[in-house]
Length: 490
Image (cartoon, rainbow, N blue to C red):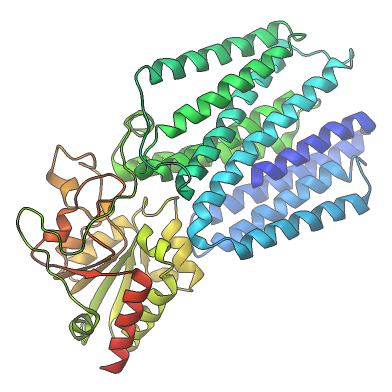
C-alpha cells in the first residue's frame, strides 16, 4: 500500500511539473517536507520490528506518507485542496473497508495484492513520464534515464504478475505445489536478458518507446514463471521478496522524474532494503539460500490424511478434551505453538480464552513463534495481537527453545513443518537443517490438528509418532473451545 500511495504521489508530481515551475523557496519547503517524511518512514519501519510498537510504527509511516503527498500536491498547486481532501476520504474509505472486511486469515493475500499494486503504480508512472517527455523537446531522455525506465518497468511488471500468482496460491485459486518444467530456468534467463537489452536500447534510442511494451510483456511473463515455481512452504519468503521488488521499482522510478522525486527515491529505497533484509531473515530461519527458495521447488498442495493412521506400524496416541483438561490441571508451564492451521480455523479467539483460563489457574503460558509460521512474515504475531495476547508472552525461536525443556506441556495448534524433528537429523528431508521449535523436548506434546496430513514441505512429521506426543484431532476452533469448556467444568 505504501508503494501504491507513493506511486500516486509521483504521478501527481509529474502533473505538478507541467502546471508550473516551482520558485526556489517553494522547492525548499517541499524538500524539508520530504526530509521530515523520510525520517518518519525510517522511524515507522523501525517500530514495525516489534509487536509492541508495530501499530505506532504503522501510524508514524502513514503520517510521513500523508506529508509527502500534501507536499507534492498542495505546495506545487497541482490541484485544489478540495480534490486533495476528496482523494484522501475515498482512499481512507477503501482502506477502512478492507481492514474491517478482510479476515486475518486472508491477510497474506492482501499483502500480496498490495505488493502487486505497488509494482503496477511504478510501471504506470514510467509510462506517463515517457509520454510527457516524448511530447516535450525541452526534456530529452538521457541514456541513464532511459535505462532506468526500462529497468523500472522490468521490476514493476515482475512484481505485479508475481504478486498476482502469489495471491492465487495463497487464496487457493492456484495449486500450492511448485510448477516446474524442462527449460524453465533457461527461459527465465532469456526473458530477463532480453528485458535488460531492451532497457539499454531505450537508453540509446529514446524514440523507441515500443521497447517499453516489449519489456512489460516479457517481464510480466517472467513474474508468472518465477513465482509459480515457488512452493507453498516458501511463500512467506516470496511475499517478503516481492515487497522488496515493489520498493526497488518505486526507487528507480523516482530517478526518472524531472526533477527527481526525493520522497519516492527514499521511500522506495527503504521498502526495498527492508524487504531484502526480511527475506534474508526468513531464509536464515529455514537454513536455506535464496537461490534454493527460488529454484528448489520445495512444497506440495495441502495434503490430507486420516486421523488415527499408522506410521511405521506404530499407532498414534490420541487424547480428547476431557482427558486433556485433567492433564492441564495444576501444570506450572505450558508453551503454545500456533501455526497456519490456527489461522485457517480462525481459532485465535478460542486460544485467547484458553490462555486466560490457564493463567487464572496459575499456569505460566508462553507462545512460541517461528519466523516462517503462517503464510507471511509475522502472521502469527498479527493473529495473537488481534486478540490482545500480551507481547511479553510471545517468544521467538531463540527465546523459546530453551524453555521447552522445563515445560510440562507443549501444545502445537496447526503448526507442522516448523516443529518436525526430522529437520535436525534426516539429511534426505527437504527441511533438513531448518531451525525448528524443539517442542519434542517438552514433557508432553499435544498436537491439535485435523489429521496426520503432511505440511507444505510435503514430508511426514516425526513428532506425531513420538512417544511423548498425543494427537488432539479436530478443527482447532472447536477443539480448543471444547477444551476450555472442560477446564471450566472440572
